[in-house]
Image (cartoon, rainbow, N blue to C red; front, side):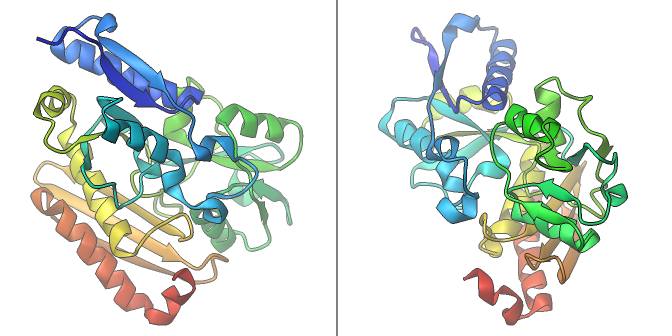
Length: 309
């Protein structure tokens, strides 16, 4: 019988802590355990400490996970809670994504200061965003827009917006909802024209392969439809060697036995893009995502991807 608290690893941002607490609360409810049986262990990652440069400049998504994964591998944590979209497609040997909580709204939220909608911004307006996907999609829809790198915690970005440093910014609606800031967006962007990042809106739990005691605990909170959808999206990303240097969007919906996926790749300036759509059996989610990646790579041609390698 477990006598020591389960150790949950997380980053220290308000959003990361909200996600860790949601995970703890769901595990408490699923297993009838008191809060004392869970210890939330906060670690600072390099991605948290370096906020003046884009992720593509300093090494990519793994900067938000390495410290947590190192402690997980050493046994200092029982499992770690992450934003799924922050996870590299290749994980350290011995670790895997064992569970996903039910997915929140995956859409991007536009927060405008000088206009309420992206398409209503004045000519030559400035948007702050560090995401290459968002930058490329903005430029695809509004080539006149000036996009500047804009990192930091949610409250930091909103403060910079209020101070007039930019005319607008984009944030994941899921994160705003988890922080109780549902009223902040001035527009929710249509996934058809502004598709989200693969795995956006989903909280994942990372644990050790073969740790049956912990993985059995986590299985009770795994949402099968989210697991299938994000598995499909991550397979698409992995096939394209997706990183923070690649403007890639992908969104899957698992509904009963069927999964539907659509993906997009863009040039960084948004001037070219290619789309792919597919559907199939939800149990085949990983293969469908990988095939969609292969198909879009063939459609776009090798020259399209040459700048990404």
